[in-house]
Length: 195
Image 1 (tube, rainbow, N blue to C red):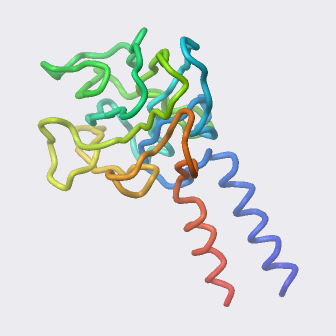
Image 2 (image 1 turned 135 degrees about the vertical axis):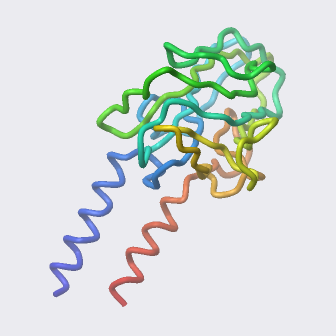
Image 3 (image 1 turned 90 degrees about the vertical axis):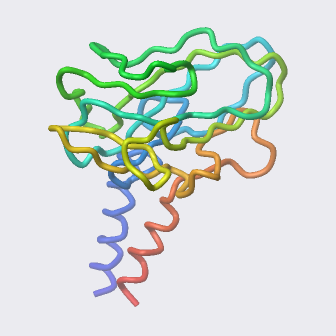
């Protein structure tokens, strides 16, 4: 029995490792790699950094999304913002921090489940802390204060990697603990099944 339990736990850990930091479905996060494995990094002044808004493990087709991604802390210059294409911009005030985008067809989801929605290239003006949060759109399609995706004509509310829109999902030059996804809680849930 103990061997079976150890194999189940090891299999669960291995499967979540391939799914990035956040193994939950329909979860928005900001990462510094395209796989969703790195949500903290360091950067010096005037060094460019690439950050990705990723929807982890979509539970159904996605052909649009809406959210805000406020960044707080270090002075920065946004050098570029790239959205998945082909896209149709549905938001009058889309910019580097606010998104309401739709596509005529569903986004292709890579095998690793990390659907890249936005890519930023930015440069810090000082090597100080910059935190990323994810929240609802400026004019949300659904109540609840969370990001929303659409697919096959159905809106669905999503989670954020930190578990709470008031907590950062990623950071550069983080002072203290790096924001982490809900993976530790998921492991605790699996572990509790065997008590």
